[in-house]
Amino acid sequence: MKILGRIDSAIAHLEGGLLIFFLTLMVSITFFQVILRSLFIYGHMGWANDLMGRIDWAEPFVRLLVLWVTFLGASLVTGENKHIKIDLLTQVIPEPWRPSLDGLLSLAGAVVTALMFKASLFYVETEMSFGGMLFLQIPNWIGQLILPAGFLLICFRFLTRALCSALAILGRTAS
Image 1 (cartoon, rainbow, N blue to C red):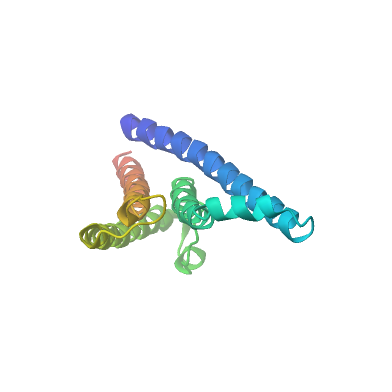
Image 2: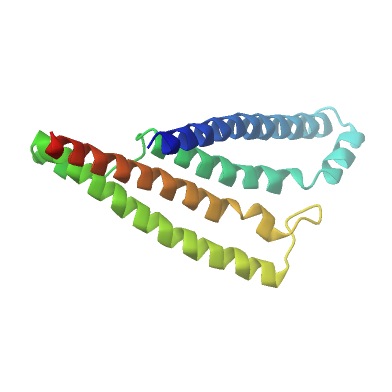
């Protein structure tokens, strides 16, 4: 179990670093576009419009980064058990049963994200066969790798939680 904790911690550090980097990149690129647009519209500087035309890849790149930030953030909050939960039962069932419910819900989350992982792999494979391009001659499927990677990360987090719940239950019944 310590190995899973170390892996989870390493993944969380990597996700946090990537989130900071991607958010900084998104804000910087968007800010640069706003400045160029303002220089062209209000300053009547033609070179700003020319430069905006040369970085036409920036807007789709920022949209792609939003997708990456979303999945990395979802995995991170799932690992911290701060994800969105819709479970009325935790308010109703007695305290001793809550670890069992948490384990069951975590297992259900793992199954759903495993199915989404499989579907997203099929989607990426389909995109590979079509051969479309995102921008700057980067294939579509490269940008969409976050879909299976994100679902796999979230599935790992749910499986880790389910295993921790099962071990807590077994430890409680053994004592």
